[in-house]
Image 1 (cartoon, rainbow, N blue to C red):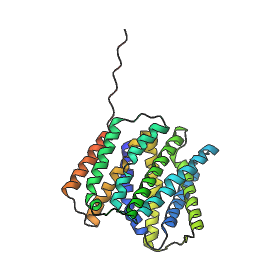
Image 2: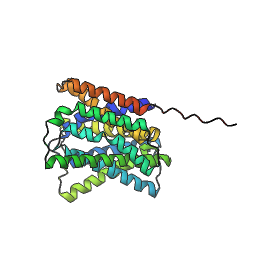
Image 3: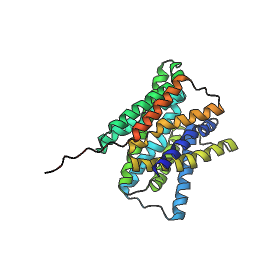
Image 4: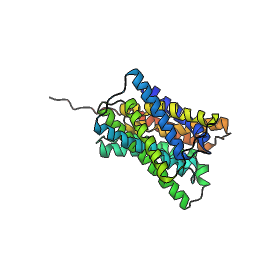
Length: 297
C-alpha cells in the first residue's frame, strides 16, 4: 500500500506543472490558488458527508488545521509562485527537494524522532542529483537581488511545507484521518488567500475558458484531493522524512514529460544526476538492520 501511495503521489505531482502552466495568464496567482483549494475542500466535504466519513474535530485540532491551511495550502504556494518570477523553476525544485532534510530535522526537534543516517545520506544524494539535472539552468542564471529574494521565498515555502507535514503527523497520531483534516485545512487555506486578495486589492476574477477550468479541475481533484491525501497518508505511515523524498522524485517525472512535450534533451550530467536520485531513493527506504541484543545469562 505504501508503494502504491508513493508512486501515485510522484506521478500526480510530477504532472501538475502542466496544469499550473495553463493557469498563468489573466487570473491573479493568489486567486487561482484560492480557487484550487476551495474547490478541493468542497469535493472532500461532499465525499465525506455522503459516505459518513467526516470526523468531528475538537477545538485544538481545528487550530492545527488552520495552521496547516496556512503552511501547506496557502503561504507555501504563494512563496513558490512568486519566486518563479525571479529564478528558474529548476532552482526552485532543488530548494524544494531539501524538504527531506528539513522534515528529518524538524521531526527530531519537535517530535523527538531519531534521525536515521540513511535518510540524511539519501536526501543529500537526491539533492546533489537534482543539482546535476538542472545544472545548465542554474549555471546560466546570474546572481542578483531578485535571485536572492527568489531563493529566500523558495526556502520559506519549503519550511512552510515541512511545518505542514509535521502538523499532519500530529493530527494522525491523535487519531484523525487526512481526509477530514485536509478538508478543513484546504478550506482554511482558501479563506486565508481570499482574505489576502481582499486586503491587497488583488482582483478575484476568473477565466471561464476551457483551458483554465480544465487545469483548475486537474489541480483541485487529482493534484490536491488525491495527491495531498496520498502524500499525507504516507507522512503518517512512513514518517515525514521518508515521505518527503517525493519532492526529489517528482521533478524527474516532469523532466521526462518535458522531453516528450517540450523537447528536453538528456545530457551525461543529467543522467548522472538521475542515477544519484535513484541511489538516494534506495538509501531513504532501506530498513536499518536491527541491533543485536546481548544474550542474558
